[in-house]
Image 1: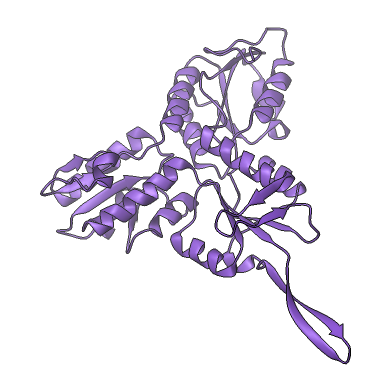
Image 2 (image 1 turned 120 degrees about the vertical axis):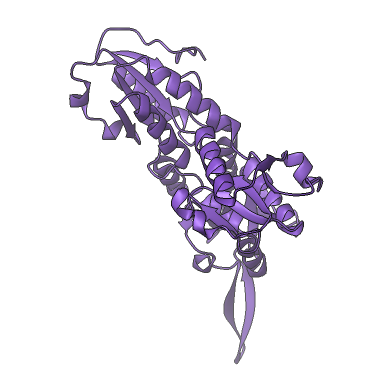
Length: 346
């Protein structure tokens, strides 16, 4: 089987950083900058939690779980750092606290300020693995609200990134498609953001729909201008908060899928950016399949196909891509080629 790789695919810097932070916390030592207490990760009863899956890739999450990472959905599921211990001293019982430290990783998608505050109140060690761009979007949401704008997020209200941004301002409106436009308040200054992993086409379409619904133009505002408080005197504004890394993967995937008989998109089923890749490829190549790994592969779909294309979402590590490509390549004698990057070239 002849296999072509997308020029841009796989794990992005933000996800790579989150995984690296998790691995460092699990394998070595951390230092809490606030308390300046250094804690050995090999202490008995040491707990390391992730508030939600650290990234949307089950293979990576399972691998980290085997190393000791406990994934929980709610702050309430996390045990605090100190446990009450009782010792007998003569005829009396003395109660005291023993510091069995708890570390909580903030996932790459971020967490709402209320969740962070609750964790601090519990006295746990917080390691923030939030993507830099997501943190920037959270800050922009706060600034927009402070300056009198009604914050609107274009995206999926059930996605953790969006939920974290929603927690940064009051009464944020989330619109996923035209059916949500009725949520928008009339005669309000709108400050519009977008879930970082959406596509430019989707964001542009929704901006047009919002403008038509409100019968007023929407002016583009740079993130820098927003953070400096430099707003136009009237009208709604939008800030392009789309991830450039995600866009590069989308563009190269679409380009490749037009050249092949069958297209494979690798990544977690819950990964928004991977689903977006699959949706875009499906538009141009009906023989597009979204798989999490090689285990899910069904060789019967290769019947009558000569050239296969492979791309992967931003939360898909290299080892999953390599395993898939090597196995797929074994179905035929044709050597592996790529659409710009040779898989065997360092």
